[in-house]
Image 1: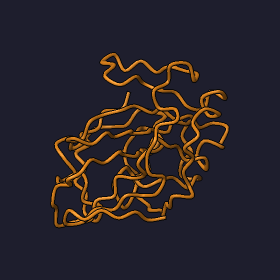
Image 2 (image 1 turned 90 degrees about the horizontal axis):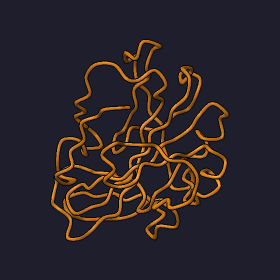
Image 3 (image 1 turned 180 degrees about the vertical axis):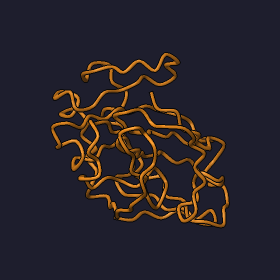
Image 4 (image 1 turned 60 degrees about the vertical axis):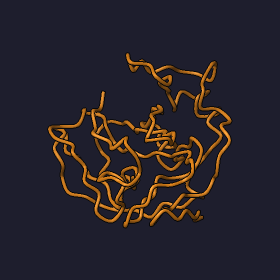
Length: 188
């Protein structure tokens, strides 16, 4: 299990400032943690914030460039961020992420790299556009590359397969949301 402090009050707080995100993660990450992405369905009106927030596309999605690696699996879950619905996706693999192009942490402009002992070992950044995402989760579930945690499941039990998966065919914007000063636009 990965424990990460996320600002769930709204998108105007410390976690969501893309250019200067405050991430309150302490300690070590689990041995097989690789990356942390996500997407979010937004509801208006949007709260005003002086910075750029980039919560991702508006429907659950995964990153094929990570999942095509035979060692990588992903886990999707759901959480509320104010009146918005967020879908964090964590990616897991044996260590060796230093050889992979990863993804910026959800809502951030960079990602940390980790050593075998789970301690940070520098950072990097990558540009991720809408074309990097796959919104058709069924094939990833069928192949066992994607696991899911049911909304409001306090046991955080990872489930497999597409049966009863609430993240399949969720309508929403397939472009990346960008928000600044209460103004929303989408980028490819």
